[in-house]
Image 1 (cartoon, one colour):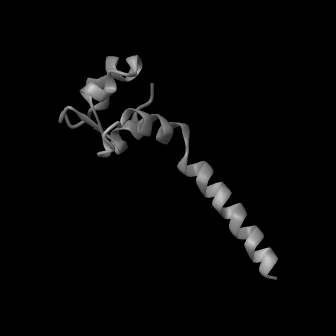
Image 2 (spheres, rainbow, N blue to C red):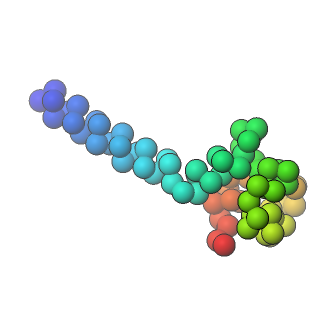
Length: 75
């Protein structure tokens, strides 16, 4: 029984890690160099596509792209 619980726990962790490490999350984390949960214009310069559309992605106009704004962005 303990082995079955352990196996299900490992399977759950593997599935959770896959969801957490989605391409969007990985891309956001790569750009968010100072890890403040936002992408500044300076940080966005590393990604031509994001930089080109920065004003459209930055919905509230605070010159930073939040994780929520980034996740809503559809290139």
